[in-house]
Length: 314
Image (cartoon, rainbow, N blue to C red; front, top):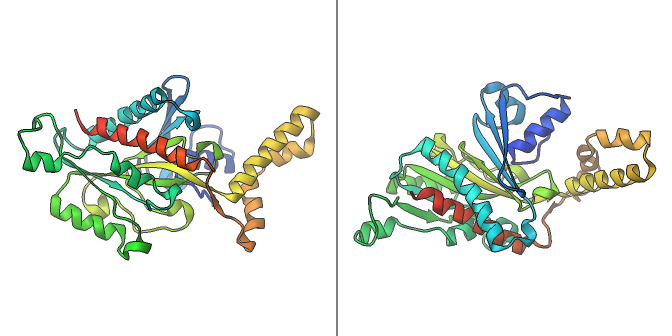
C-alpha cells in the first residue's frame, strides 16, 4: 500500500502511478489539465468509482489543484490573477451543488496563533459577510443579487475541547445554510507546493489527515449538506525535504558526470520511504514549514478570500 502522507489528490495519483509503474491514467480516475497564463496551472482529478477511491484513498468526486508559481514574491496583480483562477473553479463547484441565492456558511479551520495552521482563521477575517445585513438592514443590499454568507472560525480541539464537527453541526442545525465552504491548511509531498497551491474538492475534508492527526470528517454525510473544501499546503515532512534534496543532488551529479548507473537507479527508487525509515525511530521526521511562511500565508489568505468572495456572489 502506498504511504501517501499528503492531502493533495493530484500528488496521491502521481505517487500511485509511480509505485505501480502505470504509464496511462489510473483506473477509476479522469484527469484534465489547463493553464491560466504563464504562472498558473490547473489540474482536475475526478474520482469516478470505487476503484479510484481505493487507488488514491480519496472519496468519489472532483479535486482541482491550482498551482501558482512565484508566489513568494507575488505582486498585487499576480495575487488578483491567482484569486480569479480560484473564483472560476470554485464558482463551478458551487453552481453544481446549490442555487444562486442559497445561503452559504464559510468555515476557517486551524489555529490563528500557529502560523502554518492560521490560513483558515485569516481567510475568515477577509470574507464579505452578508447574512446579518440582509436580515437586519434589508434596504442596504439587493436581495435579488446578494447571497447570504456567514462565517466562523471554530478553533482547534486542543483549545476548545470540542470537536469541529460538533460545533459545525450545531451551527448548521440552527442557521440552515445550504452549503459549507471549509478552508484548511494541508500537508504536501512536494516542497514546491508549499503555500503555492490551492486544492478545491466537493467531497468535504478530514481535518489533520495529512499530518497523522485525523479528526472527524466534515462531509455531506456528517453535516447533512454539501461541503466544499479549500486547502493550501503549508507543511511537509522532513523526509520529504531530504528526498527532494537528494533528487536535486543526483541531478547535479548526473549533469556533471553525464552518466552514473548507481545514481540513475537511486533516482528511480522511492527515497521518501527509505529516508523516513531512518528518521522515524528517532522522532526526527518533523513537520516542517518554510521561513517565509508569514508572507506566504498572507498571500494565500488573500488569494483564497478573494476567490470565495467573488464566487459566492453573482
